[in-house]
Length: 285
Ligand SMILES: N[C@@H](CCC(=O)N[C@@H](CS)C(=O)NCC(=O)O)C(=O)O
Image (cartoon, rainbow, N blue to C red):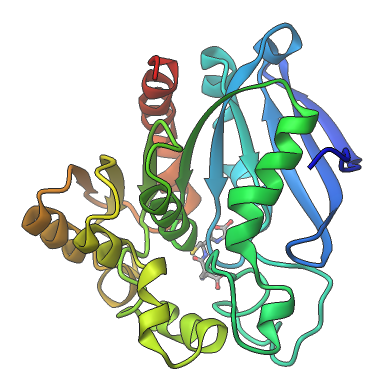
């Protein structure tokens, strides 16, 4: 694509010597207006910098991570840009879209829907893997090195994007990810509506299934709070642990005693994740 996509600056806020900026743009993949956030570290004033994608969880938009995770201080030190996409198409009014916190708006599960009426807008996989990266390349001083992380539904997104695109991301990590959405009630609800009853279509968006298929050898780094109230019903980290063990897939799964599902948990460990990604982003290919 040669035509430059236009971006409208929504806000710019200086933070730790860098800038947190929010932009609005028209997404062709989603057929609606979208807002995303980018943190540009001070190094981006003079150099091209590596990029960490952050995919947020249910009920979030581009703002939760930037406001609550406290990532900017270390991102500024390490010279890493961070982009937070929104978590679903916006401004659409599909039937039932805004009725529940775990489905529709704020709950795309980062898939390309193939079922009406969702398939017209809910193409978040294409948005976060192709369209937004292309917009980012055109407008920001990025050096082409990418890593990815996310939380809960966004942790699922980060794992799936990395496993499906071997070699694309220098590293992947996740906080309290939905590792096996095809057996989790959140995932089953979303996939039934977005992807239909054919479970064959679901497995391409399930980290455990992708690992079992041998889709990629990328090491996975996961932090999971042991006091997370979604642990047993929705997140089930033991499933990815067993799958990785069975298929000899590299996994670091840390169970963190006492931590819940909130951004207090993320804020506690984000520095370690950023340093982990920085180490991989700096490595030559
Ligand atoms: N109790 C939550 C359930 C959803 C939830 O915990 N969302 C997580 C991601 S799965 C989150 O990041 N919420 C927004 C925030 O904490 O800023 C609600 O209904 O809002």
